Structures are given as structure tokens and as C-alpha cells.
Length: 87
Image 1 (cartoon, helix red, strand yellow):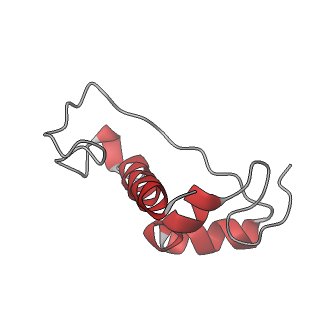
Image 2 (cartoon, one colour):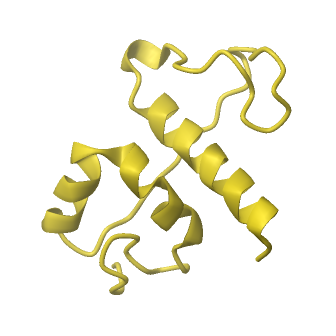
């Protein structure tokens, strides 16, 4: 994966993670992470992240944005924190 695509994907994942942690569906970003245009609250995506164990989930929950790049690069079926298989 090229560097520009990786950084764009990481930014998108970071925005999705942050948006997913907002209360009552309130958006946390005012600009689209892809186009940079103003957001339309009707267009929302949620991100599901799977973990191999509660320990990795707890690390992620402490600071989701710190792990955004790992989530963007995680292989299908692998924990983004430890790299082990998820069930």
C-alpha cells in the first residue's frame, strides 16, 4: 500500500474511531476526512474493531486515536494491537 493511501486510510479510521466514541451520535469532526468539505450529519459510518482479548480492548479504549494506524493496517481477522487471531 502506498504512503499516501496509508495516511489517508489512517486519517479516515481516526475520524471514524473518534466519531464512534461521540455521545448521542454528535459528530466530532466538522470536515469530511476524505474531501475536506463540510460534513453532512446524514452521512455517517460506524467502525467495528475486533480484539483478541480484553487486555488489548482496554489499551485501545484508553486512547483509540493512538491506535488508528494499527487499525487501518490490521489484517483481516487479526487483533490490531497484538496481531493475534480474533474470534
